[in-house]
Image 1 (cartoon, rainbow, N blue to C red):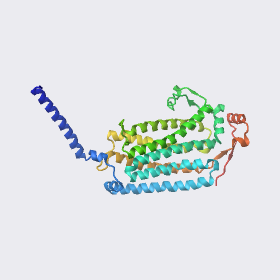
Image 2 (tube, rainbow, N blue to C red):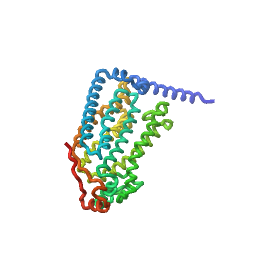
Image 3 (cartoon, rainbow, N blue to C red):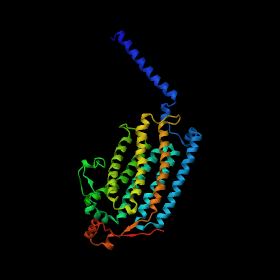
Length: 367
């Protein structure tokens, strides 16, 4: 039988644990941030009722920002359809839709807090599609895939076409001197294209799986439980995204020096900043600031809802700035590289022209 002293020790230990739990519960209750508040996802009316006047002011500013994005997009769309060469037109239209679509997802995310998981998946899927179309637009600027491949084989372009050898593909760009490199081959260039194309298709499949698990209650955003679908979808999605991003960076570095007449640098910077604001910004807030307690709990608004509101508001403002800059460069006249089979039937001659910096272009005048 246990001794009286051991029973007293056990009793005192139990009492101490109960006291600690009660003190935590009292502290949480005093702050008003109970588990019920943390799990609460407000409806539209509950959300704006909780925020009061500040919520309606936020909605007004967000509405103005979203309308500004739409107005500038349709004005730019009309200009692209009227003045852009037909070779680049469809890809350009797809690329510039990244601004209104992400803006729509951010605006709806402010209104419908319960739909943030779906809207985030939709935004990432659309960005993946636009990333693919930006690669298509890059090939179009070169004059087609044949020109793209021929330029890669030119002697003076090899520095720009350095491809990192697997498994060192993660060495971009900070460890460049430590990674083995060599001139790109046609097979590797097609691999780059495939790696970009796979992301939107895989993202679409993962979105369908995610929505199915979400409806069944097996998917909880930011839950790292091994019994929750979020962890596995997150890992697969980020691996696919990382592969596509690496390939996208390779194509960008390759094209940078050759496509300056197409204002390629500002176009790709405004596009890549969408990526930073959409994914990296959300990763910092949701994975670092929220767990660290840097995002306040304002009952009945939980830190998660507060973080979503902050992210969507920031994204709307950032998209306004990005589309203002993008519309300037997409409106500028661009040269048109002659097609491969009209002026240069001999591929060797074209490669020699690339080496001698004698690529023939004609200016496509825009009114």
